[in-house]
Image (cartoon, rainbow, N blue to C red; front, side, top):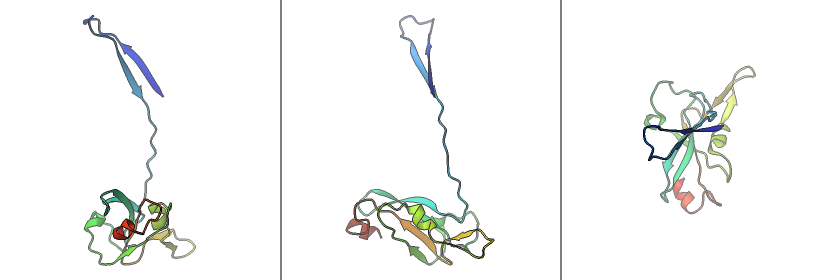
Length: 131
């Protein structure tokens, strides 16, 4: 909803009236658990800004160390197909330990990275250098 009111300044007759506009915007932000995929951006080989979903190892300690400063030595890169969102590709790496448990995301002892590459052929040409 956008509303507007004319603001009249009686002290200055030479000034035209100003339109003051206010707006209300409803925003919905997804909230993910620490063991689920987060989105990070990176500078691609062609200079464009791309994004990737990153999932920490399920057995990683849940302390306040950002994933880019992690000490895990293994990395799994998931190269998904054209038009597959990076977060969906990363979220596909999940399993249930038993019927009553929630999903466990990621790969044991490794960070999972699912980069995206825009274009008709994601992982050919410049996309191959990205991978």
